[in-house]
Image (cartoon, rainbow, N blue to C red; front, side, top):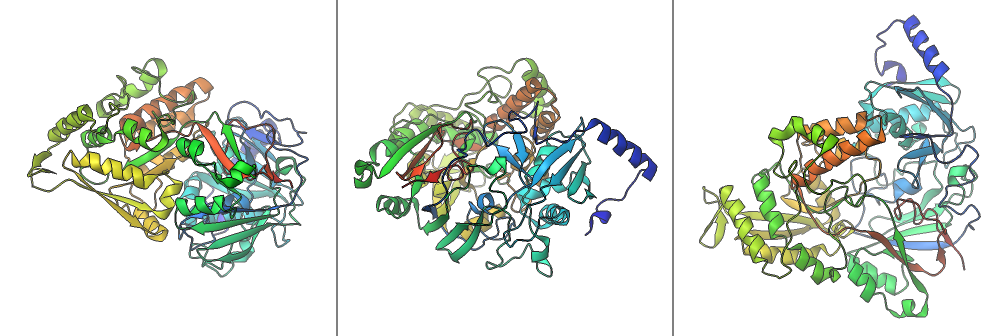
Length: 608
C-alpha cells in the first residue's frame, strides 16, 4: 500500500496547509530529541559519553547462546532467531543514548523536528546512508518499513502503526509521521524502528521469510556464514557508511563476532572455561564468587568485570497464565507465591548473595514506595479501588519465609487461601469441589536459562514445597521452537519470565500488560493481564507532561502489577557481571543503564 492510501484526508487541503505552516513556524530541526527537556549532548558532540572514540578496530570474538534457531529474520513473528541480530545488523533513524533516561540522537537521520505537542515528527535522512549492498537508504524504504513492520512484522513493532495517521515524503530525504492520538512518546518511538530495504522483498513474502532470506541491513555487521541451529558468523562491513558519525564513533569495534549454540548453560560455561568462548554474562552471584577460579582465570587470561547500573530491577521469575483457572484467582496466585520459599532457594543457589526483586520498578525512583499509597499516587489509584487486589492501596510486601526448607508458616497461610478459593486436601491431594486435582505444568526450554538462571534447580525445590500443599508441579522441557509455539498459543500454566524495564517506560507497557492484546497469539502480555486500572495508569503515564506526574503514574502502575501477583519474583540483578578474555577492553565511563546488548560488545574493543 502506498502512503497515499494510508488514511483518507479529512480536512480541506487549505486547512492542512495552514496547519503545516503553523507547525513549521514553531518547529526547529535538531540533532536529538529527549522525552523530557533537552538532550544532554550538544549538536557537536564527538561520541557517546560511554564510548571511546579512539578505540581500535579489529579482533574476533565468540559468544554462546543456548538452544538453537530456525530463522535469521528477527523482525517477524515466525520462527526463532538469534536475539543479537537486531542490535548488530540494522540501523534505525535515531539511536538511543544509554546514559540518559530516554534520549535519541541522529543515526540514519541527520536531524529531527517536531511541534510543541509532538503531534508529528519529521526526520531528514543522511545523504550518505547506505544498505550493506551499497544501495542508498531512501524515504521510500522508510515508509515501506514502517508499514510492513506495522502490519506483517513482529508484534513488538505493530503497536505504533495503529497510532500513525499519515506518513509521507516531504522532501528528497525527509519523511513526516503524524499521529492520531496525543502521546508525546510517539515521536521518539517512531525514530527507533529498524529500516529495511524495500527492493529486497519485491515479489517475496516478508512474514513467511525462509532461513536463507536474510534481511539486508544498514548496520555495521553482515552475516557472512551460518549453519542452522549451530552457529552464525558476522563480520564488520568495511564499507559501513556510518563509521564516522558521532553516534557510532567508538562503537562496533570488533571485526568478527560469532555466535555458537549450546544445549544448555552448563555446556556453554564449560566451553568458556576451555577457551572456546570470549565472554559470558553471569547472573548467579554465588557462582561468580566460587566457580570462576579455573586455570585461565588463575593465569589472568580471563578477567571478571562488574558493571553497576541505575535501572529498575524489571521482573524475573515464574509467570502464571491468568487466562486459565485457577490462576485467574488472586488468592491462588498469592498461595503459590507463599509456597515459593525464596529465602531457602536463594540461600541454596546463590548463597543468599542476591537481593529479591520487590516490584517491577524496584531499585529506581519509579518503584512503588513502602506502606500505603499517598498523594498523587493514591489519587490515581482511587478510581479503580473496587477492582484492585488487596494491598494495592493499603500497602503490600512479598511474603517472606523463615529460611528453613519446611517454611511452615507460609504453607499454612497458603492452605488457608486455597481453601477460601475452593481447594481442599482430599486423599493427600489438593482438589476442587469437582474432585479435580491441582496440577501445574511448568513449561521450560533450553533457552529458558537465558531468562531464569538455574531454572531446573529452582523448579525442583519449588516442586517439593508444592507437594506439601498437595499440588503436583510437572516440569515439561521442550525445544526452543516448541516452546515459542506453546507460549505464543498461551498453552501453559506457568513458565520462566524476564521483563527488563527502563528508566523511561512508555508505550511498550501496553504491549507488556495491556488488555487489548492479552489474548492475541504471540502477545508479549504473557500472563494474560486484563485490567482497566493498568490500562488507565499506562494512559496517565503517557499523558504526563511533567517528571513528577510521570513518576507518580509509574509508581501507581507498579503497585497494581506487583499486588496482582502475576509473577513469582526471584532475585534482582543489581550489578552486571561479565567474565571475558583479557584482550577485550571497555571504556572507563559507564552508562547509567549499565550492561546490556548496547554496551557489550557494542562499545568494547579487542587489544592484544
